[in-house]
Image (cartoon, rainbow, N blue to C red; front, side, top):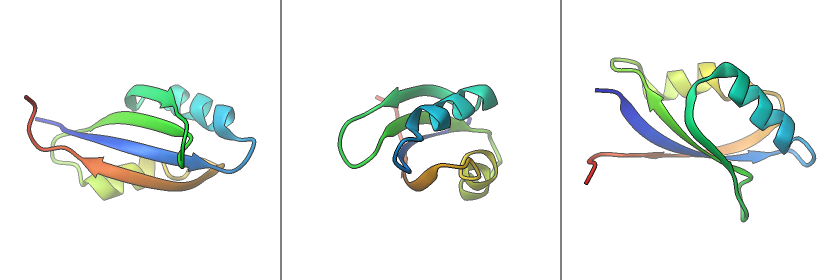
Length: 79
């Protein structure tokens, strides 16, 4: 079973839509929303079974130019 994580992404000013477009092109997310508050985007992502969560996020998301910071929330049980 894959691991579901939620990732909040803070973008450099003026780059949010470009970052969102790059994420969409990579087709790694389940859902992607623009949000208000401390972070600009909220992403739902399923990390493939057996993959290291941190490495997967670093290699597939955090190399996008314009991402300033991220906050990852791991999930455990679905109700």
